[in-house]
Length: 385
Image (cartoon, rainbow, N blue to C red; front, side, top):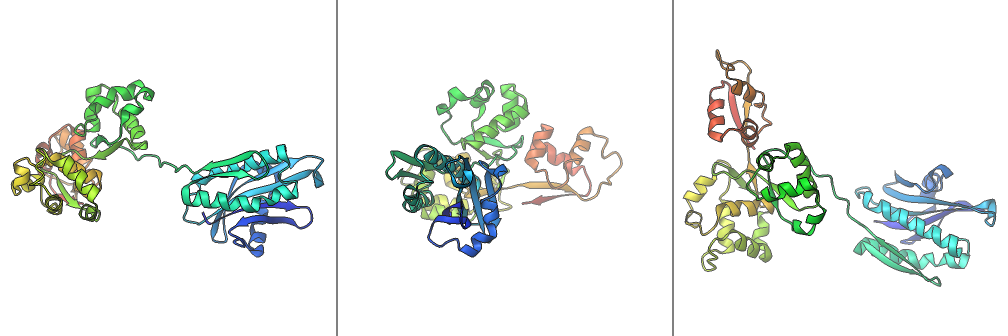
């Protein structure tokens, strides 16, 4: 948020900026270029107008009051938030409309705008509104000489959750019991199966709910940040560290949370942040979890639970999965290669976009079975990414 201003239609000079904060942010020349969009026709009165011009975004809600007591029988003003071009205007939309309605109410009940003395109070109110919203995301401003208060709050807009795939594993990271009484029956039916181990398709099978309905229920939980999505844990999986691994080396709270989550026997004298950090840095392309366990006593002896070790890294963005994607280079193959219906179904997924996890899930097959099927198809390669 860069500035806030109140502009109105003056009966002598026409559209003008009556008050703004910071002072002189909007020059006369700049306002003249955009005034037709801020003080506009009555068709847009009461509606939110967003304008991108002169290097800024302007969000306003025009107010038009008709009454014979006004000169020209009407009063027209607009309260405008000025934002940078990179800012999402959605969280400000409701606040602008609410502020416009509050100022309209003040005029109808207390002649706040038509009385020049009362209107001058906006010069001291706008800075309080601007600083409150910009610095704290909310403000509470008393209207001088009137027993009224303006309360505004910015609410961040949640992004619609992405599509969830059948082979992904939901993991509870929030307290769903708080909202349990508000969930529908279907969501309550699948909740017991969300354990960080069952993948989406298995949850659908065990809860006897259609997989598409399960997916929509999980998207609802994802929307409220109650679950995280991880991959199916297998000892044949490969992972690699992300740039965020440095957070584990520098944040004591994360170090304590990690050790508390991944250790099985709470051996405080054996497991240190350095030990866990070194384990994460050993993850890379070509190194499977089985190999990591075999080469580290602390994992092999189950001092550190390898599944929880991987889960913590995924949820906190310290590591990411290295998926393997089979890809068919040529559709031509040996005689009878596609006589097996399963092989024919598999061939449709060998486009370099379906990972082994997804293929296994869709075919209801183990990784070994899929690898054997792929080996029977000529000109097929695998890509790790």
